[in-house]
Image: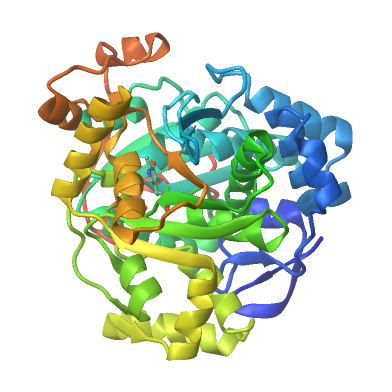
Length: 466
Ligand SMILES: *Cc1c(COP(=O)(O)O)cnc(C)c1O
């Protein structure tokens, strides 16, 4: 299996290169050259497999012989050791045709653990084999950071610099990052918003002066391996529910990573009807899906902070497909988006998008109401991101379609919001309780590229003096 870049379809890279690079040299994102298929027969076999076995089976199709079966199985087993549910991804039946897919049983209580735990171990495996050391840089709107830190802590082959927007992530989200004690982890709070953090990371990547000093790698959702390991819970949930139907997934979305994995799952053979892109008031993905335009505004801070994003980085992967792998069109489109802050596509393309996706924007009031109603009707406390997904489905008035709601975070990560609507405290799971007492460690820096670059050079243990 080889990979190419959304900006250069002549490129031919192996999985291990794609894993370590994160972003391609040309600024594009990696995608497989060909899509493997999952047959009906394979799908029926998944019914009797556990989460780890399905993960092996699917990921093997994209990794092939680069990692042998025994080692890949070991990596996967190890990656899910720290999950607090034996079945890893928990499915709750809500009504006869609706399910909640709970993806918050990993160490940092959000769905990002499901891919990042594996990615951390894949990194370690490949780096040891190739005798390399890497500097991972990543921006986080809240949950990626802690999941990445947990996946990379105490690993000798890597160091990790994580940028979060200062005072724009929840208290618990911040503590999940800043209380981890490990000498290869650096937390940086940037005085700006998430898009500022993401822009700085992109610029560090493309900075020619840093090319010889660092071996940079990315761990945010532009990394292909994350997209790959997010496919697993789509396959897992459909196989376990197994009603021989087509399913609609409602996916709380920000960077378009999770729902893009759903798109690939459908593409390679999973019976998915529609993928609902649920957005908060940062509604770029909604206007894109429903009306075919994107108009970038400044980021609005909401009660679902992990979705407070204006420039969804994975969208480029989908646009690449939409433009039939025409690199020049993709480059043009992205350039225009950056320059003019707006972009339009034609009616035919909108139709093409809607073959896969539906989308709805959910405001703050609706989000709060969804949390309240869910608690009253079902006695389940959902987090604000999950609430956006529930509300989006309702707005779209899709009736009688089997629907799986992805629950992306544990409600205890957002105690202020939950307490406000249902007047109840949601305690942290036992294993995370110590969080509230541990000492925090992070550096606050202005949103200045040079200041951040210098901090990196000063702190890095892997920086080369050239
Ligand atoms: C990251 C995150 C999202 C958004 O997922 P994307 O892959 O960025 O679209 C939604 N909910 C939670 C809790 C998250 O952590």
